[in-house]
Length: 393
Image (spheres, helix red, strand yellow):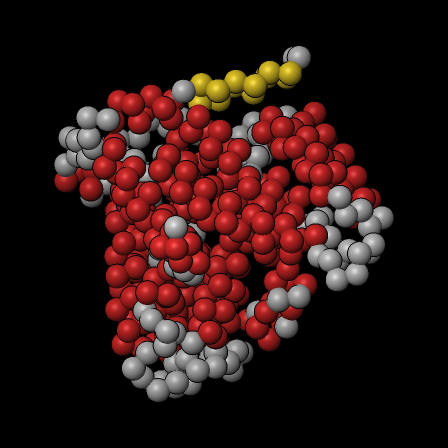
């Protein structure tokens, strides 16, 4: 028990568990158990209340339902960081903000260039724009105790802006046929949440009940249901008006962290990372979709994140984080190429749920690109930690 307890106390434990869960999915998908793996994910789960019916395969329950909890936690972290955290100080916004912008723009452009003659493949342009913070922080932790806290904060801040960009992309670019009635119900839930927040209601059960109604309506609306988590998080009070010193938001964030890290994301990884290599040839490997994703994650993130950060430092728009050097910034740029969770999620929106019949598997590019980015980032970080700090170069 002590060994298990120490494992879950590790800062890198979530990333390590995510890695082994993904490997387990790959092994099962390429073993005699592959039939049962597909059967499990294709199993239809139906919930019916009167005329209201939600009927989806288990895979979509995971992607549309379980991942709401992940996005809810992301929303809570965003709100806390902007109100009380590192991003409350505008001076701490410029460098990670520009880095995140470059880290989304350049990979998207590289992917589009690879798929300029592939109209169906262009729908995946946002896949390499994402960063998996759990994996990236795990690699950062593996580099040893010499990694400065300022570098961890920089990576986390950059990933927060990256998540915010991914949320906006999902909201504006990955929606299907819209249901005005369902959107009206969502629109009615938002002012109710605002009202109970303004009246100082601390009972989280009330917020959750309204959030459940909003999730069902969002699921039927054509806008992706996971955005419910973000919207709901913004209305959770950060300070209690009735109990001094109590923060409903921080309390909920702390409770959800382990649930997301050790349940939600591993289940998502297991359900989405099961690539079948049977019959895969060079044509599949070099298809512009997986190839474009891999190159965009590895090269695009480095160019975008590092290039924009370097330019901001050179132009004195931002200062290099304390106790770090320019090579450390480059190492972080490499680590941002670990797309995994968010890239898999956006890939499912771009291709699987849109029912496009493609002769490729975008997950191959995500996994290969993420692995190469992790190795390069780790190597660059080990070299950077031997160099003097605060050297812009």
